[in-house]
Image (tube, rainbow, N blue to C red; front, side, top):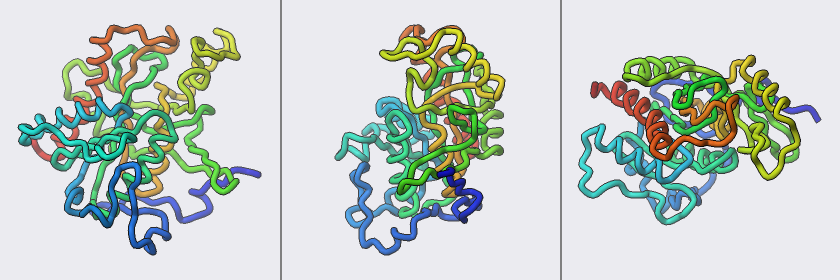
Amino acid sequence: MAPILLDNITPERSEYIEHEEVHVKNPHLHSMEEDILYHFNLSTKTHNLPEMFGDIKFVCTGGSANRMKAFAEFMQKELGLDGENGVEDICAGTDRYSMYKTGPVLSISHGMGVPSISIMLHELIKLLHHARCRDVVLIRIGTSGGIGLEPGTVVITDTAVDSFFQPHFEQVVLGKVIVRSTELDKSLAQELLQCGREILNLCTVIGKTMCTYDFYEGQGRLDGALCSFSTEEKLEYLRRAKEAGVTNIEMESTVFAAMCRVCGLKAAVVCVTLLDRFKGDQITASHELLQEYQLRPQYLVSHFIKKRLQLL
């Protein structure tokens, strides 16, 4: 059975409309008396979601719970908010995700890989919808492997691509393969690039990001428990990726881009490179250097948020 490209045959795709509330693409939700956001330990009956989240304008998400807590604490200082009591994990009742709110900024972990971020996004988008949020920008901040880039380079994704370098996200639904577009908002990417240029010594580029379903074989690494290819085959694949415009590799961007696009949400992916995959597979930089690298997307996104809020 041929894959079904939803953008071409259904009205699923939404363009971003300014001042619109966040929409969901599921007619069944309207008939439910209660919507339980199970992995957040939140519910439309037990929590006043508009009161808790109605002022959210920026959602920043990354894989590590500790990293997103650190980002929330960083934003608390950057926005000049009262930090005497620290930041509170809104999802403390579950061990799946961690969520922190600092003013109009929501910081939430998404775990590792497509399945984990997909679950989070379903419940996050419903949360924003139930809270009647408007004009929300979603940004994934994280780490990646670079292709021909110096470690520490910050990549802003203009299009997420799959392992065939195609701007698609495929998913099996009821036994059928459906395909969604993974283009991200170009104007938002350019705005973030300009912010990167305003930060001293921050190397920032725009490029395509390849999303894989695996860290080892799926990314062409030679150091996993399994390896079915030669060094030469790995390097040839990376060369083809570079020729296709791919600048870095991670494991979440395609589903992130696809789901945000379908729901009409402005979204961006901002990832720092930890190594150049042409030069190796293992991350050998010191812990201190890696910590500094991981802060770079946070500095960029913080600068962007403060400019949007006219705090600079």
